[in-house]
Length: 263
Ligand code: ATP
Ligand code: MG
Image 1 (cartoon, rainbow, N blue to C red):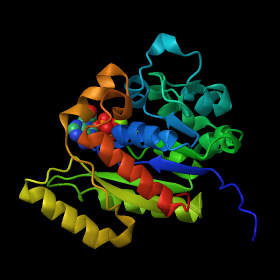
Image 2 (image 1 turned 60 degrees about the vertical axis):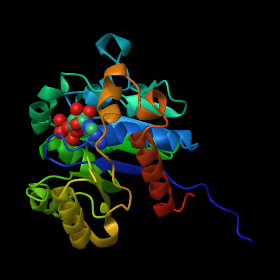
Image 3 (image 1 turned 90 degrees about the vertical axis):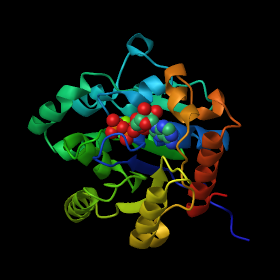
Image 4 (image 1 turned 90 degrees about the horizontal axis):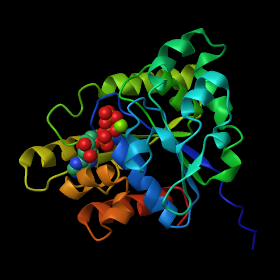
């Protein structure tokens, strides 16, 4: 029998220019669930709001370097990384100076590839690298999509969910044809799902019709515990591991691993 090769690192950008759809929540909790299944996971926070960073319990004084220095100063991401409270989950934290990076990047050489360059050395150390993107299609998101192998799109189950998505998909196509031909849409995940509302079921049906198998079977329910966990600086797995939100992110991680031939 052929010897099994160790699976290569996969870099996943979690993106949707729409705000508040569950990007950071998914980055934190999918990351933690994958780490608890034995993967080595790096979460790269590229959002100046730093929600993934604070959601993992980090405030400004807790780290020396941030992703800003990787984007603007070519500091290799592995030098930015901090261990988190979850074994095998690592964080490249964001800081508020990333707000200026959008502008500062404009003047940089090969400005779309700054993150690609900075991540190069980190790839060998992780099974999965998740990039939490800001809610815009600016240069930071372009950098994330250029560095990524795959994009995961969280979609909030609400009336305007699909609006604006075509803009994201067009941007992904532009990146595929100009900067990163091997980028693929890894998946679409429904977030803040509430079984009791008709709207949710309608949006879910639309998304599944539009995306087919790209849509994850797992939908993330709307639960207070998921919203509370970040203020305690903990992924849901540490905060309340028996809650429906924790279970959902565990299912999502299992599905993610099956899709990548890792289970
Ligand atoms: P932004 O675009 O601002 O970066 P985002 O897409 O990263 O936002 P989150 O920060 O993950 O979205 O979520 C937005 C808000 O909704 C947060 O307050 C979060 O705690 C809450 N939230 C996310 N997912 C759920 C859920 N499944 N159930 C309840 N609340 C949730
Ligand atoms: Mg966010």
